[in-house]
Structures are given as C-alpha cells and as structure tokens.
Length: 421
Image 1 (cartoon, rainbow, N blue to C red):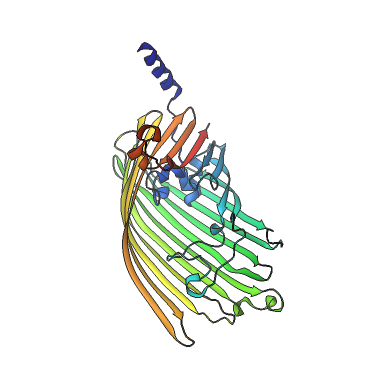
Image 2 (image 1 turned 180 degrees about the horizontal axis):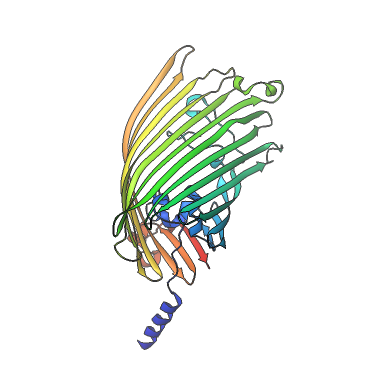
C-alpha cells in the first residue's frame, strides 16, 4: 500500500497543472459547430478570428480534426509579449478547392441531378491539394487586437498523360477585436476566397472555372451579465459562388465558354444565436446556447452546347438549434468534456428540368427532420503537453473489446496534441 501511495504521489508530481491550450478536437468533443466561435479556444483562429493569435504564443500542435491524412499542423511563435506569428500546413480534399455539396447533395459548380453537368477531378484515387499559410496577431494599446491570415493551396496531376490538370485556392482572413473594460469584448472577422481549376478529360474535353469566389462575415461578443456568467451572442454570414464551363479541344476550344455546357451554384448561409458561458468554479465551463440557421442555394446548368439553361434547382433550409457544452477539470492533469445539440431542419426544394422541348416539369418537395448530436472527450495535460481526444460515445457502452467482448468502432473520432513552452 505504501508503494502504491508513493507511486501515486510521483505521478501527480509528474502531471503538474499546465496552462490550458485548445484545439478543434476539443471543440468537436463539446458538440462542435458554433462552439469554435463561442468557446475561447485556439480553434477561434481558424474559424475566422485571427486576432486571438495573441492568446496562443509559443505553441506547436497537430490537429487531426479532419483525420490523420487531412490534419493540420501549426506553429505559433511569440515575437513579443503582444505579437504572435503563425505558420501552418494541411492537406485537404479537392472539394475545398472546386466543389462541395449543395443542400441536396450535388457538387457545387454544377447541377448534375438536373442536367448531367459535373466537374472533373484531378485524381479519382486521391483528389487532394496541399495548403500552407501564415498568420499574424497583435495587441494595439490596452484594448485592441488585430489579426490576419493568408493561405494558398493547389494541386497538379499528370496521370492522364497531360500536364494541364491543376487547381488553386487563395484565402484571406482579417480580424479586429476590442476589449471593453475588464470583462467584455467585441470581435469581427472577414474571410475572402478565390479559386480556379482546369481539368482535361480523356485528352479531349475540358472543364474550366468561370468563377470561384466567396466571402464570410463573423461577429461575436462577450458581455458579463452575472458574476459567474457571460452572454456570448454571434452572427455568421457566408456566401459562395462557383461556376464551371465545358469545351472540346480543337476549334471549339477557343470559343466562349458561355456557348458551351456549363453549371453554377450560389450558396448563402447565415447563423444567429447566443451562448451563456457559465463558470461556477475554477476551470469549469457550462455553456448552453441556442440559435437559428438559414441556408439557400441555387444551382443551374445545361448538358447541351448553346448556352440555354436546362435545369434549375432552388433549395432552402431553416434550422433552429439548441444544446450545451461542458468541461470540468477532474484532476490537474485531466479534463472531462461533453456536448449535446438538437437541430430541427425544415427543408424546401424545387427542381425544374425540361422533359420535352419547350416544356418544363417542376418537382417540389418539403421535409423536416431532427438531428441529435452527443459528444464526449478528454483533455490530458502532462508537463507542457496536452492530448485532446474526441471520444466515440459508443466506447462508454462497449468499452474495450478485451473487457466487453463487443467490437467497438474507433475509440476516438479525432485527436490533437499540443506542446507549449
């Protein structure tokens, strides 16, 4: 018993308390979503508020919130007490450059369910691009924070015998924050996106980018409304316009893309809500919140040369949501996390597609559904290191196979590891 006690004391000494650091994996284990904005965290930087870089100097981390293959690596170096430099890199899917999903699941930049228009891809086996970026955050005077971030991504694939397949993506992000008194703050973020691609198929056809632009606006506040609670309202607006055109190599290649097959998607999203950040004790967070999301997309395209639009899809979603995140320091070295959200999604869609020349058929549908999200996780701190785990909730039902004899999916959906000095 004495030996066990000595061992426990030694472990406790080794796992001395460390300053709290944070990652997207931590946010994912606390219900994700808007918590990347409303919970103070390193994830705020990549969510669109680079001015919070000043709170995270002298740290390195790997954050596998998108999986080990597509994870992000970050280096944050404090140039001074009030200025921090960020260097980061990641490998991301093709979808982040040219494509994505409309409300009904089709790729952006096309209307495949309507008119058979679809963009190509650089590689069917591994459609990825590399991205790297730099950021800078600083304090100005006693109450102002400034931040900026720029990233560039791209890929090239010569697998089909030509060297013309490529894509590029540029991103700009600016942030401005104000500390109001000792406890309140107000922050703003602006995101801009520019992209393009070229894709030749079978050495004859080509898809080109007519447009790939987007912007986002973000604002959030923190206002003390009780000795142990803050109100955290937020508003996010995002818009993306992606257009593609098709041409055949040869004489028609030099013609206007407006006269060939084409497709486009305009996507608009807005979220408005508020959290109540409660801290009843040191290193304890209980953060309920509610909000309303709205999304609208318009996709149109044609699979015929000549430019006439043959298919149009208009869709929108209204989604009120509510839930909470909680984190408590069980020991100096261990934090327990849980999150929950329920979203009520009301979906409306109308598709128009000609069946015979000169005639249109319109198909409309309306549906609603409820989405429940339950998350759990741990944060383990050991002498400057922190491991964040977004744990699969099924683990608590089945435990390890050696104990329960029940096969359980992956123990953790994602992880992150941070070292700060």
